[in-house]
Each structure stands twice: as structure tokens, then as C-alpha cells.
Length: 145
Image (cartoon, rainbow, N blue to C red; front, top):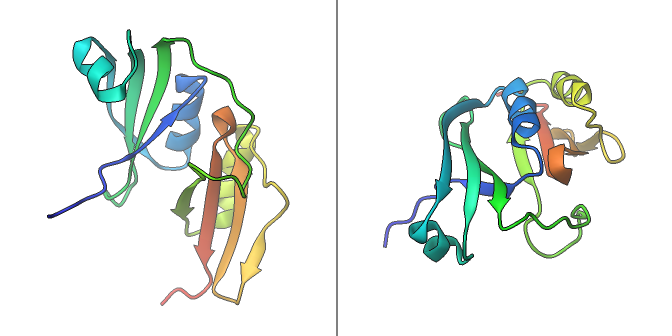
């Protein structure tokens, strides 16, 4: 059986703010829609499923995020995910300049959870809390070969 990752889906509180955050980081909106009806009820497993969605692609063309903001049923607020919780964990991006990525994140009120770490002189990396509490990891390779 062939298998290919299509996208990572993330429910968000504010679709426009989340799109602004990720597009400022360099992702591109490749599609938007409002979905509802029997097919979405069946696929998602929620009666009356109705959501606004946006598909964002990474500049390399390989990664896609599907962001969705629920209209119905009402979105359920939860505490932001902690790095050690079981379940959906984070979205990670390789960046060529972690300081620039952090400056962009800061313009959206998003800052490192603790700071920027260096892993064995191979990567500088950090987690930020993005829109809707999404954990976002930035990693900059220190060896450019």
C-alpha cells in the first residue's frame, strides 16, 4: 500500500489571525472554503459539521496545514497543549534564520516558551505558543552543508 502525508489539520479559534501568522512565516494560502453537509458529518463524525477552512502550503511545496474554524458545532476551548501531553503535539518548521522567525512570531504576540536552545552544534531550536495555543517549533540548521 502506498501512503503519503496530505496535511496536518488544526482547529483554530480565529482563522484570519492564524492565517496571518503562518503567511507571515512564508506559507501560502492555496485554498479556502466553507464546508458542511452530510459528507462532512460522515467524514469528521460530527452531526451538523460546518467550518471555514484554509489550506496553507510551505514554500518548498511539501508541507500543508489545513486550518479550520468551527461554525457548528461550537468549538470547544481546552487548555493549551503542553509539550509532554499525549496527542497532537506541535507543528515543526525548518527555518534558515531562527531570529527572523522569532521576530515574525513576536509581531503576532508569540514568544518562545523558555528560550532558544542549541542541540549538539547541529540545530538552534525553540517552541513558541502560536495562535489558538498551537505549539510551533522552529529549527535552524547550524551546519549549512
